Length: 146
Image 1 (tube, one colour):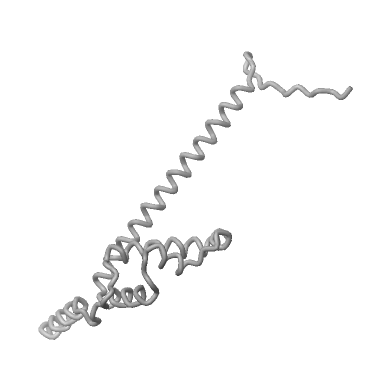
Image 2 (image 1 turned 135 degrees about the horizontal axis):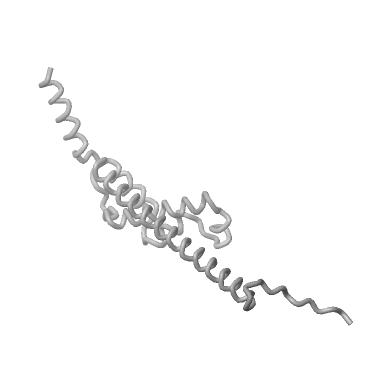
């Protein structure tokens, strides 16, 4: 029984690492494909959370992506199909993309936090400048119409 389980496990491992699909002639290199898929994730996120932002700038996701990376749709599809046929490599690519997205989220959160702190400081300074020597808040002087 153990020999059968061992055989099944080894067959599974070998089949996962075996290249079922031959690489296309114009295969997008792995690092560039990671960049393309990363940008695709960002653009899809933007189009689902705020589609008007892309519409206002007249950006169509896929044509923009192809132009930015200097690829065409067939090259993208064939490369994506090839990488998907090698599950361990494809998973590694998506883990790198996930890490980059998480780093971007941290960067945006940090920038938002700094902006909020800056606004709070300016607001506090404004309130402090409205206090007189006794510590009371000065009321604005209203001018009467004559």
